[in-house]
Every structure is written in C-alpha cells, then in structure tokens.
Image (cartoon, rainbow, N blue to C red; front, side, top):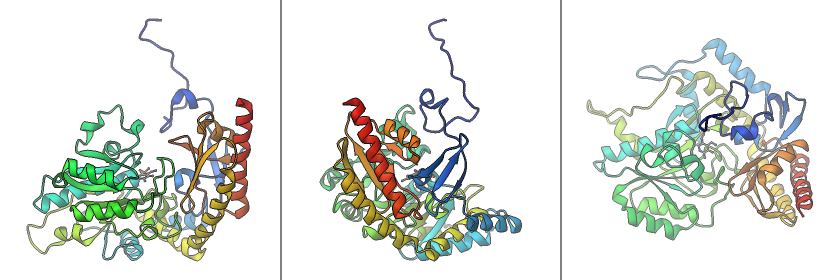
Length: 426
Ligand code: PMP
C-alpha cells in the first residue's frame, strides 16, 4: 500500500457525532424505544438513563402527553414562520409563558432550534448592542475555561474545552474571543483589565458547567462575574441550556445563584427534548433600541425557518405544564439531597477521587488509574447509561421522574464497577 493510503472502516451511513470512529464503530448502541427513565436498544438491552440523554429528557421519555400535544398541533398547524409581519399563535403563547417564568423582568424572547443557535444569536446580539450604543470596539466575547456552548462557529470559538476548539483555526473562526478563569474572580478581573473593558462585549457563563465535568460554581464566583460585568459595561450572558427549567431545583439556576443576566440562553429542558427548540431571553437594555418608534430603528437579523416552530412550541407549553402538574421542581430538590448523600458514600470508595452535586446534576471524578470511559462502558453491561466527561468524570443527570431507589441503584452500580475495575488493575 502506498504510504499515504490507509484502510477505512466499515460503518453505517450515519456519521456519529462527537465520536472517535475507530473506537465506536462495531459497538454502537442503537436506541429504538424508551419509556420513562429507561431506554431500550436494538440488541435487547433495557438501560436506566442516568444522563437523561444529553441532559434533556427531564420529564422522562416517550410520554403520551407530549406526543399528543405534537399530534394535535400538527393537525391544526405544523408551523408558520415568524419573519417580518408573520407570527404563529403557539410561538406567541410560548414567549409569553417564558417571559412570565424568566428570572429577569420584561424580557423579549427569541426562539430558534437549540442551544448552539441560542449562543450564536446571543453573541451576535451582544456585539450589535454595543455597535448601536456607539461603542463598536466592544466586540470580544469572554468565556470560561472548560466551557461548553455548543458547536456552531461561535460556540467553537468560545469553547473552553480545547478538543472542541482545535483544528478549525478557532482563533480566526470568530476572532474576538478570550478565556477567563473558571473559578477565580481575581484572575477574571486581571484578564478584563489586560484586554480592556472597552474591547469586551459580553461574558458567557454556564452557572454549573456541564460538559466541562459537572462543576458547580465556587462560592462567590458567579456573583463576582456579574459584578465585573456591571462595573465594566459587559453584557452578562448566562447559558442555561442545561440548567434551565428545573435541573438545579429552581426554574432557572439564575434564581438559585442570585443572578440577573442581560441575556439568558436556553434549550433542552424547555421541551424535555421532545422537539428541537432553544432561544434567548433578552432584557430591556438590549431589546429597547430595536423597538424604538422611529423609521431608522435598526433590525436585528436573526431567525431561521424553524424559529418559533409551532409544533415545538406546543410541545414546550405542555412540557412546562407537566413540570408544574407533577411538582417536578420540588422533586429535584429532594433528589439533590438524596444524590448528595449517596455521593458522599461513593466518595469513600477507593478509585473515586471527587464528587460534586448541584440539583439533579452529579459529577463523579475517578482516580487517574481508572478511565471514566471504561467505567461508563462497563456500566452499560450493568444496565445504566452514564457518560464520561472532561477530567475523568462521570455524568449523573437522570430524568426528574427518577425514583429514590433508581438513583441509589445507579450510584451503587458506579461503586461496584469502580471497585471491580480497581481490583482488576490492582
Ligand atoms: N450550551 C450548553 C451549556 C450546553 O450544554 C449545550 C449542549 N450540551 C449547548 C449550549 C448546545 O446546545 P445544542 O446541543 O442544543 O446545540
């Protein structure tokens, strides 16, 4: 074989996302149906979904209430766009509902198809804001080390996870970005001073970092970021794509941590993943210039075919009603307490280096000699979905309808697998 040729692997037409293909081809798990907190695979496994998919299936899987809402909406109006003069009634209704739930008053609501979209719009809106305010040099978007904000161009350039940044020339993809410390307010202040606030448009932060390893904020950190933003005319963008709609026990983590964002991005939990939907809550300081009663009022050019998709909005409305009807937020508070207790015990198992909890978000960091990926793989054979994250950490984020017993079993299984793998290595 000539030197620059290589053998290629066989695989299905579908190109797996975020996958090292040689590691996954031939052992992919094909989910064919689900119910509640369980998913079923083509090869006959029933797995407890300890991650709620990608932190999205908050009310559980395959629920008739949400399927019915989608069906009824599609029979009446699948969707109509929200460009120009046109709107649809479901998008209007959902926006009103979201504005009522918002942790900040008097917001306008931008709707699109997911978290990456929401981030892209929020960052562009931040830049547009300063341009209109006569400060066009304020273009840089700050983000935290280990941050994940999706994989569109903006999300790639502001990623704090190096593996999501490298290979695209992300410094020039969206050039005006910079990283800040993930936990040290003084270091953030230094970075802001070095760059110069006159060049900074916005600071984007997950209240609890998800993909970066389930990292709850260190005490005072988020409040510190908010103060730095206020003191320096930097828009504070809180990315609640994971934390929104109850994941930390309050409707938004902004409430839990006492934050008043200028822009708030959401997705996942708004529909519990039953339809692709995301968006941005926009506060008056940012929306007012676009609502000025004048012929020269500027246009904010956002939007795609599916912005405000009527079926997605109908599903979101039913999902938000379910959170209330089934008192799922108080349930998350209970489950947080239980998860914290269980992880306290797990922490004493040899091989477990650290555990962290915020709401129904748990992270279990393993000692170096164990691999989170290998542990997650073996947990599948025990009937549990978990997920390896940065920092040799396992993700725990089951649906809110999880029972106490299921949560205990999940944590117990992690302990068992960690011990078994430790023994094999020892
Ligand atoms: N922001 C955060 C904090 C996320 O966790 C994610 C997705 N995991 C995104 C943005 C991107 O959302 P999506 O995958 O819907 O584009």
